[in-house]
Length: 205
Image (tube, rainbow, N blue to C red; front, top):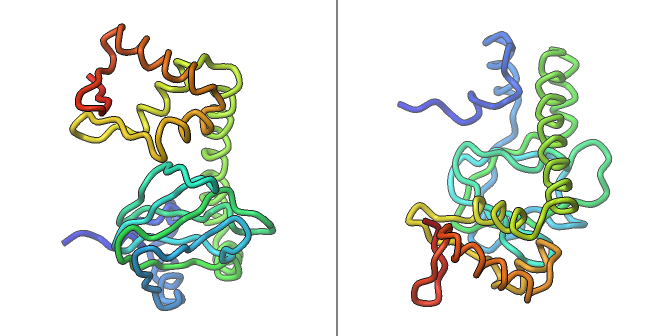
């Protein structure tokens, strides 16, 4: 029998099992959301982060470009806590989902109970900052080919099909490149035998 995603939460690394059990008993009742419901938007979001207990969640840019999907065990909303006035993405439900929210006040109480919980939260934010810094470096310093390859790596299905959420025009805006430059780079990657096109769809080799 698999362990509950809540037992595997990043907050518990190095925390005594009895403390973990005490914290989990204090959680509110999980909430259920139906397909299409928006959970976080730019200006309307809970002061909480969520653990996906079941279902599927979509993370999109505010322009509507799909970024990734999350399933059981994933977390989202960590940066919604502690004073943020805007949230960076739009998060909605792909299929009926049950979520466990951990509110700012609750997390603050846990941090006061065990400093290790604070350290685990800080470490996660640190990893996110490093990831975002690398994204910024790539999108400001990297070539169009590097940016596109990064996008392809994040949007290739198990069968090799490359998904371009919102179409190539949307991808061009997300990568901050001109559409002509994007099309030219796709052709270049095809010439290098990295990707190929079949029935109007792109695939990674």
